[in-house]
Length: 118
Image (cartoon, rainbow, N blue to C red; front, side, top):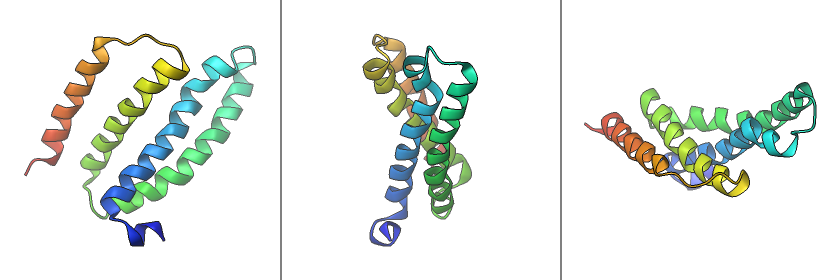
């Protein structure tokens, strides 16, 4: 329904951003919240969270494939990953800001340019 109201370009990016929130938490959240649990418990919880990610990411990629090329979808996901991960690392995980975050972001902007030009 949402895809019929809004542009598939926008819906794809929004869905990929939402799925990436789940992915980032599934991959790294256990380092803070389940540090005292066995690794296999953390893995099972992370799998459950990752299932939510996949339930959003798979339809997002299917919709996105109707308007973006596969390489464009991949670079969009990489930009979203860095955009979500840096605030997550700093705010949730308490990591300090590093200028390397900015430089990595600029490198990704270069990748975006090459994937979307002409």
